[in-house]
Amino acid sequence: MTRIDNRANNKLRRVHIALGYQSFAEGSALIELGKTRVLCSVSMEERVPRFLKGNSQGWVTAEYAMLPRSTLTRTPRNRTEGRSQEIQRFIGRSLRAATNLAALGERTFVVDCDVLQADGGTRTAAITGGYVALYQAFHNLRKQGILPFMPLTKMIAATSTGIVHGDMLLDLCYEEDSRADVDFNVVMTDKNEFVEIQGTAEGKPFSKEAADSLLSLAQQGINKLFKTQREALRALS
Image (cartoon, rainbow, N blue to C red; front, side, top):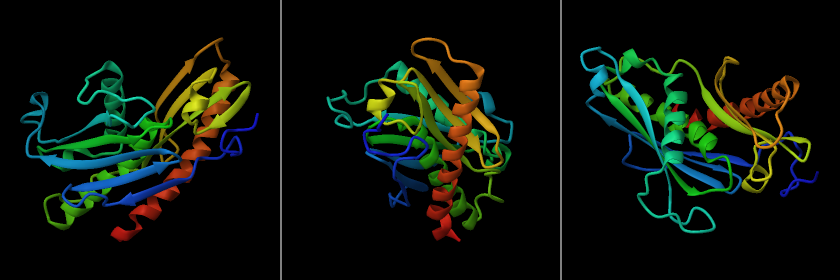
């Protein structure tokens, strides 16, 4: 099939990450993935959730929201829904997988992921951009002597893959995702480890061979995202 933007099946959309997009956050990044744009910002709080009090370790969590006209029709502001809660837990789990929580002290780092414009892949873009924002926050706090060392132990990035009309595609836009027979969201580290795999058959079940091929395709895309993250963070060195 010919893709909407004429990409090859194994190509990401054009991706760009702007580091330090907000002046007042501990760390921030704007990620653009085709028409999808997500603003990620990090705030530090001198407290931890109740279940961590007294354990001498910190926490990383996320909040996710779509601005009212990030899509074709208006999304009511401040609406709490199950989808948003599921996505922000997904983002938080992914970022914690790369973080040495004991190095944070009893502090919470909130990664706010606000979707400015949505064209598919907002949750994976939020993880990829959220990592960059979190890295900047930790880098700045380490320079200030607040953190003893860089708490991030590995890189984290994410992308989507899917099967649309029998073709395996990398990084689905909304039009492709809405027609997908199989849809995967994949999170990986730069050590070739899987953090999370969300795979769904929208129609008939898929085979192990198909799953393996989709994961391999995702890994190719994520390796390219790591390169983009490194380029964005180069300004900090």
